[in-house]
Length: 528
Image (cartoon, rainbow, N blue to C red; front, side, top):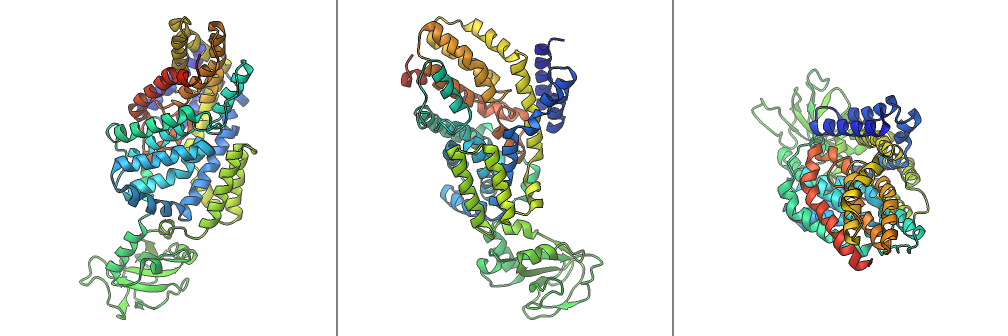
């Protein structure tokens, strides 16, 4: 069978499987690369190339960097400042997190910005009593818009700059992209703020139950339940914390007499209070009162975080809330300074462009482990393997579109419809081709496919190549209709609990705005 036909069939089946939601995302992704190999469209090394792709490695390391910010309390610290600033109104929260994502994406790339801020946005949503699905798609879309603010925002920007020079035009300056990027960021933030709460569904992801509690709420509950007067900082700090445990059935602790002020035999933790089980006549024990422990009794103990972690692994007790989650709730806890320094160095290296992003990510992940800001096991757990496998499996499809000529078929078909009589019509057709292809293959691959056609059209019309290259960049960034359009769309899919069909609801009106800006506004700044 013709490789072009096979490629289109594989794409169609994959889209149907994604939309149905009945097949796990990882299975669909792996099925795509295996199908391309079995049918001979790609060789085995080409089909498996996604797993060694620098973008995939970079994204995997970004999850580790993101976890370090969350585990050391940087996320909790930021959330404590964002929530009072924005309140609990969805519109204000969307506007603030979207603006932050756009600005950060301009300097450390879309993927880096989303990975760094993703845990913050999830915590902010939980603290504001919102489901993350109301915030994460707007957040990802705003990051895509922010990539148009500088030359370093996305790999597409330097690519089109070089293509413009090779076609007889001039290179775009580092901040020249902001002439179109700044208005698009404003329009994007405005659009997702107004339409996001109305168009986005409420999805409850599995991970939502693992969110860290608010430190003030947790301390308030401990004081109420155990009749203690300690301040929040005395209960939960960077060095030590508290944990509430239940006496397990058949525990060796059953029958022991304890009271507040005593220490545990294991780990020498201080007992702050005891509460009887639900079937007891009394609740919290009075200060200084000796209590004989029974199965189901609750005990509040305090000590170093490492000791608490070891203590709750004992078969004698059952942790009500794990120390791991409570520690995340402590603003700027242990290791926060190291995590922030490593993040700052990562941002500087990404912005400078001296070192490839994948290398920067690997160095950052290694530094976090070496400095003990993050244990190795926790670094492995932090990586969203669903996202990694999904991206790695879809990269071969992008390659197949280019190598088989399937992308050229789409481009030629649309160009024949539009013709090349008017530069505005030609620009519209070029942007439409880019917009359509960009929903299924990477924006870099899309630009590389469409750019030669745009250069040829500009030459045949005798007009400047500059508006075509810049419009191509804008249309390439409008990858909002599917989760497989960009890595950041995939990165927010699992934390937001999204389905394949959730993206186009907000993505379609936003894509139309980008299309209008590319065709109508870009030629005003970069004339034909």
